[in-house]
Image (cartoon, rainbow, N blue to C red; front, top):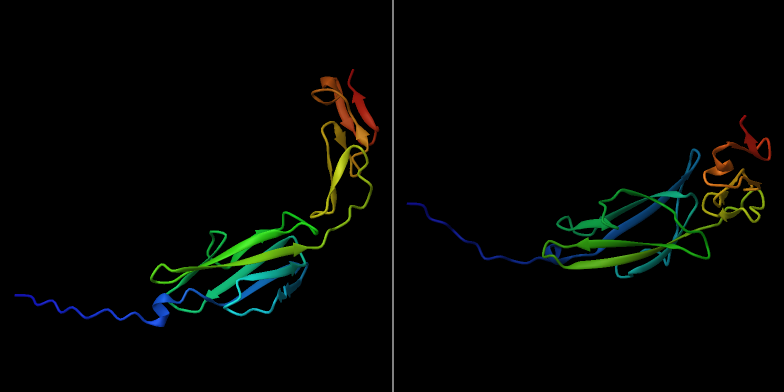
Length: 174
C-alpha cells in the first residue's frame, strides 16, 4: 500500500512576482560597446522607458526579480539582438514581458531612439535617404550612390544593354 502525502500549497512572493530586476540595452560601434541610458532610471515599478542607442544593432538583456519568472523581449528570450528600423523623430518600441510562475504578467515598454545618419549626398529625384543606414535608397530605374543615374525601361535599358553608373545611363549592347 502506498500513502500519498499532500502538502498544502503556499504561494510565496517569488511565485507571483512578475517584475524585472534589471534591464540593459547595449550597442556596439566598431570595437566600442556602449550601454544606453534608460530614462527615467530603471526601477521595477516603472513600466515605460526611453533609451537612445548608438548603433543600428543593439542587444537587450533583462532579468526577472524572481527566479521562478521568465522574461521575453518582443517574443524572444534575452539576451536578444534587434535592429533599429526608424530614426528620430520616429522610434521603435520594445515590449518586455515578465511572466511569474502563477502566470501573472507585467509588460515594460522601451521606446528605442536612434539619431539619424545623414546621407553623404543628396539623393535627388531618384531616391530617398535611409537615415538609419545613412545611404540613399534608389527608386526603380535609378542607380548610383546618389541615385542620380537613370536607366529607363523594364527591364532596365529595355533589355538592350546594362545600366552603368560609369556611363551615366544605359550602355547598349550591339
